[in-house]
Image (cartoon, rainbow, N blue to C red; front, side, top):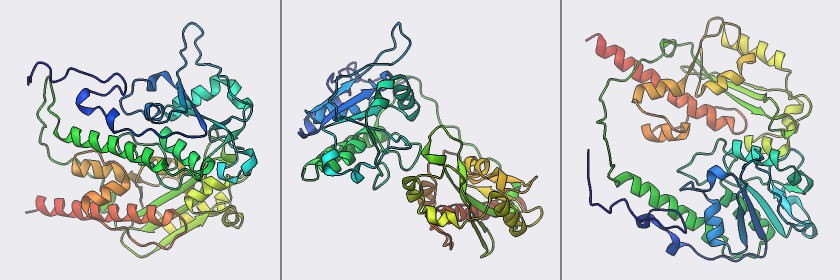
Length: 393
């Protein structure tokens, strides 16, 4: 049991809800906007220490945050008074890109939904009045800067980042929007620095030193192929089952690459989803049927050859592409077993080991993703060989 001064953990700023020693209120700019910002927030996010809707409310005078409570009704419905030209910032399948709207159709009020993706979907579902308003969506120019809470997909960003991205379109003359993101970055930097030095209170368990856990024997097979899949939502519908649109693979121990663009069927994926993959509908129009792509991949792979992907999710998505009975392994699981800690993102694993992506001649985002996975697969091969050498001494 560790102890400290009696008041070391006392004191909280009730404006930003952070401990007083981590309060960032004095560091927050005040950035007026012409656009009214209305945030509908899931109640679970209200007191989250790193929620960005609170930053929106503290930094932007023309903003408001509304938190519905289920109470006796059991729903999170809360109707809000909004002007006729308000728009909901939500990735509905038929929502136009905000920057594609003509200037005379831009909203005066922007409604954002704050919460995890599951919370946001519930809020949207239980507030049916939102669907009566015009919808707009964004195509983020870069991945989220959030380094504390990880977004489930590369094209998802925090509430604050989404609002700033929207304001760049709504108020292109605004010169102070970067101040909002700078304050966001400072909050994250301060928290990461604090986490690195904070003294933990209460019971403390010493880290148990243990040898690295087992690696899959499939990694020793010289025929191993590393695969990566791109999948898309039919018509952009988040409730629909994903369909493979690109399937790529490379031999781990040879310069031999496979690529198939797969016809997605109807309804077709939306352009902005394909854009994130570095693909276009025109690419897929000349693609193969799923059955043809699977047959060609089976011939390329060869009988009995095992397959690896960075995540089990890729293997699950690509199940129809794999010959029946193909042995598979997830590189991320093997990596975690080897280093004895969580892996984080694939790019973080490469950086941690000082690896460079392997160059592979495939199209779109798959070029980098497959090259990264291939680098990890080769690193794991070498670690497994080192282990085998030690046991034979």
